[in-house]
Length: 117
Image (cartoon, rainbow, N blue to C red):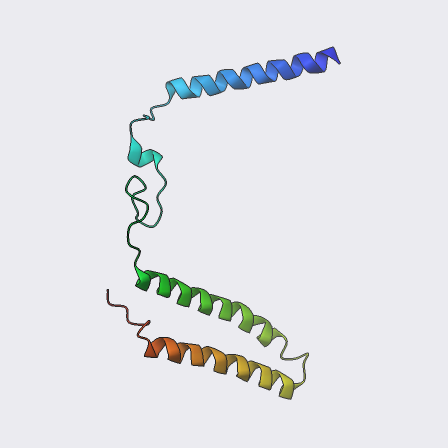
């Protein structure tokens, strides 16, 4: 029991020594704000957090997520083609594709697919 406590104390002491040595030897400066700050989408974290956000960028992100989920839903439909009745599979997949094309048509009418800034 005593040897386990002694061994854990030695490990704790050695780890603290290594942490202290790495902090004192490292070349990283606390004054270097840009290297210590996280990089998030080109925003400077040292500025005001409530700067105006581009709505166009947000809409493009939502469109990307919708079509990304579309691919994740279409792949199992292709795999299940052999194990399901063809008529049922055709109805479900055509309904799904029509819904996606309707959404794409709506986005096109709202000029969300216009890539000019």
